Length: 448
Image (cartoon, rainbow, N blue to C red; front, top):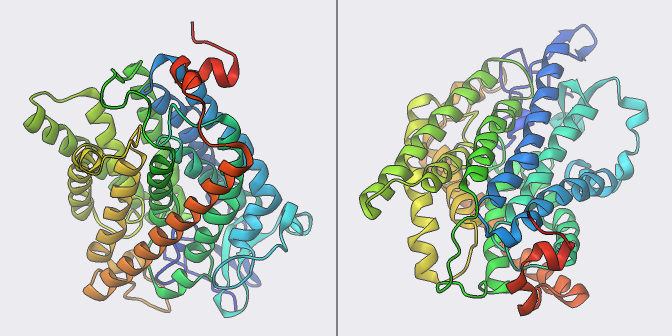
């Protein structure tokens, strides 16, 4: 039996994030139909999420590295956009959203097989009693999910900025997208996934995107080692103006990330947009005032980092919480991100160049856990479960379980894939190349 949610209500219980929750079909006698309003919003959201990587993340990261690595850093985001688009089409989408089993999809949708027969019909994910009907075509669903698959490995590059070979980045991105990202996406976002069945809440990618990328970034930073001169040389950002522009694009694009994850133009999308704005603003202020109190001055870099921290933390909760909890999540994220990017990094001694773990890992964990505390049941209500899922101690424990599982799997998987990449092409550039800069040594170009 295909589940057919009423307009404005969630489609599934518990673990179904983003795309599977506030599906709002216009029902007909024989089933759901494509809704042009929902489709238009999802097309817009897809473009907004792509904007987050190029040019958003590319500018954000490039503005924070030294001049000799600006082009190489932008190239990483740009090339990952191309690489993952093809990988997703060939096999990534099938592994993430094919029927498969509880742990990974199958290969039945390789090269998007079957799309020629279903491209103009409403999309149905899954089969049998657990199937979910959407009011958008599969082409829009898979492209929206493609943009998530793109930005996740792009976020990891912030942890190993200034020192990884371009060839290593290419090999690692392909392997990681297929063998780490796709399985985790299947666990959380497919009705057959075991985290989905567990009942964990993740509206738009707290586990799949941010914890996944943050933990992978931490492992990569440790495996590659510190940058030459770390702690001694001046590694101040080359151009914070670029970083501010990038962070601003991320903030705007995040409305597609979170509000788009409602899978339709309805009330839930509106709530997700509102709480996203509140959390980002609260976190920016939280980080800013923490820095002001401890270092004497509020910095531009701190303000934009705080905003991103809030956007990360609200991501898993955006379709489940009301404005006051969003404010709390934002403040906690701002303080936690500041701690993760400063005290924790220095205490543990790893070189997370652009704080991929300090912001995305730490604040992704914050959001994933706090949604278990603050979830507001009516936002996830269905006709089958009219009370929805509310915050409780039991739900908090479920969030802990899912979060720890993703951390462990990603850490082990990333470590293995980095070692494989090292054997195949080598991970790190030579010392002379690192001193000269990746722009010249990896791409033969130089910023004027």
